[in-house]
Amino acid sequence: MQVRDLVADQTKEWTEMVMRQMAEEHELLKSHMSQLSELLKELMEDAQDLQMKELEIRQEKSALRRRRRRREKFAKRRLECLSNSV
Image (cartoon, rainbow, N blue to C red):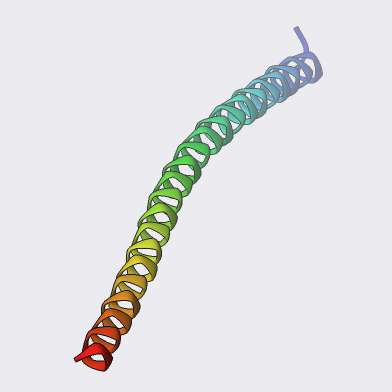
């Protein structure tokens, strides 16, 4: 074999090895991105669940405040009526 043939073979092997490594790296990056995407999706769903619970609590508190105000107004009117009738 001539030196030129050896260099050509080595160059071809090197190029194939580099291409394989690039393909493997690409697949690893794709897999990593897919895993990150799944994780982000789970985190966003958890955050949405928390936001929904917070919204429900706020609505509940608001409804309780409205009921309390109505009872207070009713009690005030009743006292006024009672004091006017005495």
